[in-house]
Amino acid sequence: MKKFFITTLMAIAFADMSFAQTNTEAEATVEKHQFAYNLLTNVSYEKSIGKKTTLRLSGPIAGGVLYRSSSITINDYHYEESEWGYAIRPALDVQVRHYYDLNKRLRKGKKVAHNSGNYIAGVVAAGGPSILQSDNVYVPDFSLVLGAMWGIQRNYGERFMMNVGFGPGVSFYDGINEFTFVGGVTLGFRLGK
Image (cartoon, rainbow, N blue to C red; front, top):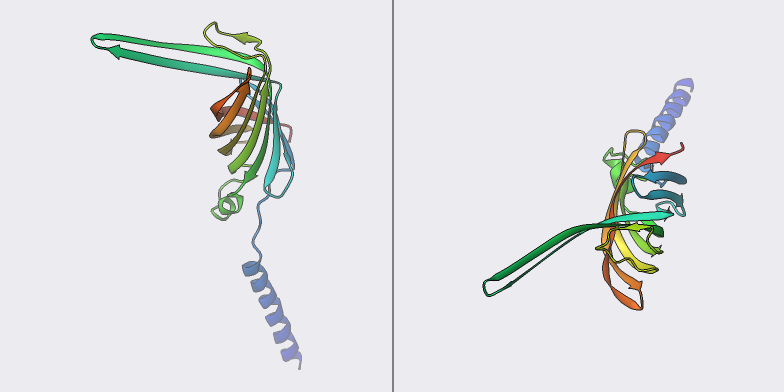
């Protein structure tokens, strides 16, 4: 009777351990909140609003660099022109991000801490009059951009982070609305814990 009891107890214990290992899979979730300083541009705050969804706010300023090139050829006449420009202005950028590949990254042993993953996002951005700009760039006093974006966010080491995102959008300024691209590349450092 004693052997039967010990054998049954061990069988239940091993079966329970085996069941727990095969039927439970860790699920990745986004960070509750994180602050970041984005080099040369602004600060951002990302807050969890779901298991894999965040609300990200960036501001209070934004900067941009523009390169424009044009050329024309008529008969034997050829003209080329290119120029660089820049602008810095007050701005607010709001994104609702959904990190869709966190579980896949976790299964592959890749880093998911601090929202390191691929995402899709809805974007609303507003900008005010320029603080500083080159003479060859026009900056409206107010602009609004609505768009959608696909991006990746990666974290390296304890603090360094990189964000790359792009997508289509619509820009509204001076009574004009036109197609535009949203997104860009940001490098920065996480602040806090």
